[in-house]
Picture: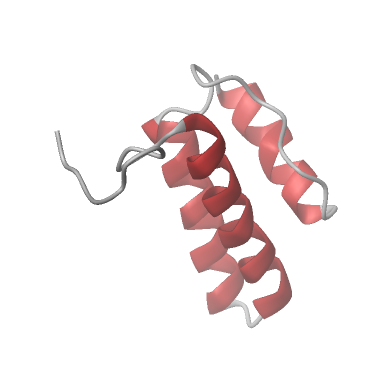
Length: 76
């Protein structure tokens, strides 16, 4: 799992989208990408921070993380 996360961060650093399955995009990978974005913000690298957070948003939508993608106003 650590190797997949390392590859995902490398892709974000290069500005490329992360390709992963729903199983790989679990809470740990998501949290790691968010921590990477926070590290970028601390270092003043706002561009990479924004890219990382945009990638989290894209993957959240792709894998249905959080509220239902089909009916966001209804909570289960």
